[in-house]
Image (cartoon, rainbow, N blue to C red; front, side, top):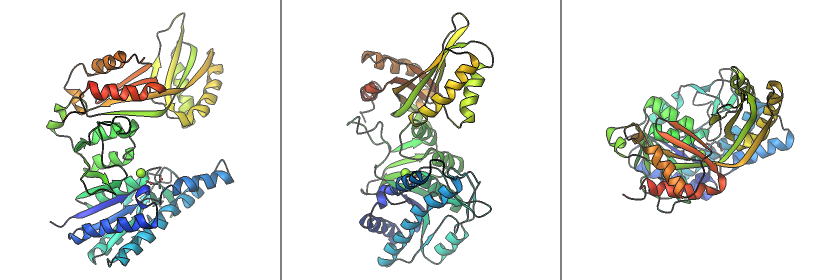
Length: 406
Ligand code: ASP
Ligand code: MG
């Protein structure tokens, strides 16, 4: 049956000319089966990182509009080359930038949100039998300024185009062959999951399993786009990210994730009275610092400690902001700890099974791992622990929930 397929290839899949030709062959194979093909690509290899480094050699406070002008060039290189590669294989192909496909965003440069996609030129090119190649990660404001969609934004371009074109599937090709029960580098007996629900994938993406950009999963959920995560370098099918169904609830825990890029900050001996938390987190929020887990201790003598985690990259900035706030509100001081990690269990089955968190804590205590902070959502439980125990914790949890077995 002929389908409309959107395929997205990430930076590592198009890292050099040879790999681009390999991608062209894979696209051509699908086209040869009679499918209509739209291909979204990232910048080659680590191009985007390279462009960021270049910018930082010029200024530490780049104008976001100019940053987007710079970053969007990476993807434009790939689309030109891939279209040429397809043509060399004898396939009519045509490349388009974000502007050309009418991918309109708001004007929040470097993290723009998609407002609408016209996609007229894509439809027209498909109608005359062309393979369409689109630059990921980029869009354009109403005024015609180039924007980018945040790191990993090509996933979002793929999913958004699939939604706009009502494609049958969005295939995300990457250097891993699917979503696993845990990071296979940490747990050798981790299994590839055939299917995960959008919500599980969202938890995993935001908890640090970097297979798909979180916003692309939100978008896929909203528009019901089936997303198939698979390997560029292997023919096997990967993991289908899809709507939840009842059978998914039979499994208590679907996967274990971990995130080592965390830091913990504590503000010590804060006066325990209304408005203090608002001041602390309002001040951080005003500086665009996103915090994750928050714990406030029971107060003694009218004073309490507040701890929270945040991305390690923001730690210094947050410490600085917090020192000012601490002085303002009469707190004793601020301490930071970079040696923390977050391990989490994820699964929609948690909604219907009791005692899941207790099983997690028991597994950690058996290994002698101290839990510093805990947070829960409907389908995940996360613990902050000392960084050096991350791998041990992930393996212990993988065992405790019997994820290695079929
Ligand atoms: N090239 C961009 C990045 O590295 C977008 C992407 O690859 O998805 O973040
Ligand atoms: Mg990516």
